[in-house]
Picture 1 (tube, rainbow, N blue to C red):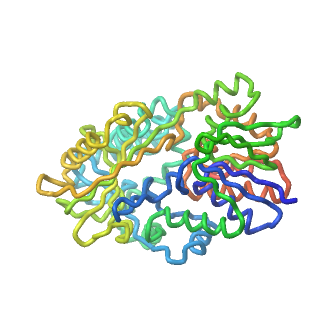
Picture 2 (cartoon, rainbow, N blue to C red):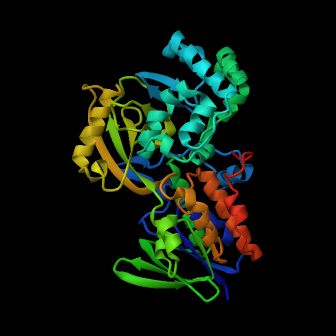
Length: 469
């Protein structure tokens, strides 16, 4: 009889695992349990009266050929887009990542430029001890650049100051390959370098990331896999040898039990542990105190922008607004916008905690606040018409690097001893991974299942080595 693999979560990691397993072997029955009513997780697409919202903002960008080929084979019509994001700071636009080009110097002014360069050189001479995210940023970029381009944005993103956050977030997410020679190169040749242009292209599905993951979901179903939507996992039952024997989930008001030979989990690590039976108090405490940051995004359809911008993302570094980023969907793909010629479809991103003032704000009041903030940063003015809006709320969007995070390795070692349980995905591993990292971890887990290995290190090593970063 086929062995049953239960996959918790139909995001990129879960769907990748299901597809890889079914396409490589006929010896497994695959069942995916997804809490939401739609596949894709935060990488889903939402249709708002003909305008498509990319909920999380997803560039399909990787330096791993296997993943790049996987995307292209899955969706042959994927677009190639030029990558452009900028920072909005002090009412001016700066390159992201920051480059010391003449335009940057002009924006900062000669005095600030000298302070930035001096601070950066000092950071390279004096080796700062890294105990927090603030230490990491200052060591890599200098104190002045940190204060301008990292401090406020990071506090807005995580809801606490960088000095209170583990440096591992920066090590996993921030490009730290900046050097004195690199700065001089930016000043002299700027963006004309051929190697820079190669890096500035990414893949993107014509109808948003959801098109990719809905395509994968359909292929999984065609190969015999089962996807149960609206299934909230509430219990993990183990046997005498510590193996997972069954998964309990709610389907509406109905409680269901699904026997399992293997379990791949991309649900939040906190929720997974809290759903398990017989977990020692020590590990329950670590899991209970693992923190997350929640997320809200409002799509706003406007008649036009005051200043037409070519960016796909704009990072907002402005203490006068709560907004974190702005997506310009027209620039991701014109097909995301019902009337791309006459309207502009924006995604305004906000970072919050479930139950706080932003989260509890009713849709009308939240929309009024967001539109006012668009005017404050001068993307629109009073002459622009607001034609439509739509709001999405995402719980546990970002696993955070404070709270009990310093003890997470203890929890990981406990979970790794469960032989047929494999943790994958951003929330499954409690890592702020990119999409390709989540997919690679899932592929490694599938390899272990196919080989009969209970090894977990190869899964955790994805996005852990300096070489891969």
